[in-house]
Amino acid sequence: MVDHQIRRLTQEVGELNDADRLRSLLDGCEKRLAALTIDTTPQLLRDTQTAHELLAQLQAAGADVRGEAARLDTIGERIVTNASAVIKNLGGRDPYNRLRAELAPDATECWWTLDKVLEQSHTRLIKRLLILIGILVAILAAGYIARPVLFPPDPVGDAESAATRALQSNNLPVALQAINTGLAALPTNTELLVWKGILQQKSGDMVASTQTFSAAMKTVGSDKKFYLVRALANVRMGDSASVITDTTTLLNRYPDYAEAYYVRATGYEGVGDRNAAIADLEKCSALAQKSGDDTLFAQSRVRLATLLQAGK
Image (cartoon, rainbow, N blue to C red; front, side, top):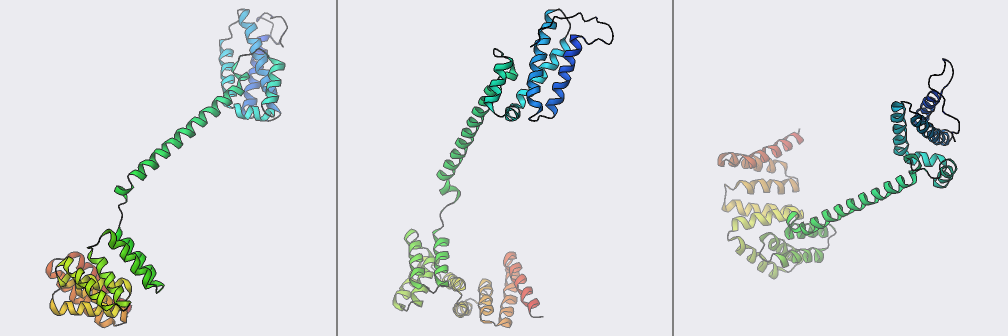
């Protein structure tokens, strides 16, 4: 504790007065704050407290120490900012409280309230985390509620994907069950009916297959669309021979059907007839160009170029 009498500030040159001592204490505090360690932190708090008491005595004596007061305020604020590091370097809250009881048991200065600062900081952190969790829960809840709009169900795609996986394991019953699940949601869907007819055919149930194909034909009202849908289904199932059969039947009836040439080329590729595939793609691109179907024209030319390049 500072218990000496305040001396006059007009001491002779070379004699250390109380104002000089205060500035020296402040200098030391600022240096220790720049590099807080286990060794420097206790002395930082001791010197800060001494500087506070010395400043109060100088102010009481009428000395102009406004600059020093501002520096001490800044030191106090920096100690508060580094509250966690200060208490950690002291060995925890208990050693910090013992040092406070030793140096300033009745102190209310900011550097002696670091335990409260940490508690408030912890409370604010908990509140922020709770707010963040609340926001995330609200977002998830909103996403769940809006799920049917953002991600509408796709019975056709889901059923065909499940059936395809089952066929890869040669499991016809499971594949048929997947298609029936899709048809339960969309009983008049042409694609699903065609898939069901093909699977019934593969299972040997020709009567049921014929009936299912007839139902699929009615949903589109045209053999032109029906045969193309069935050919595309066979592409998915890897049955290239059936792809060629259906598209050939289709082209015999509709010789200028560009899409049928495009799909049949896939069938020919599947059976290894590269020349026939090239011929169909050339025919497709010519018909697509003639009809102004730029997308189909581009797709057929890209596939054609790939086949021609592969043959070199």
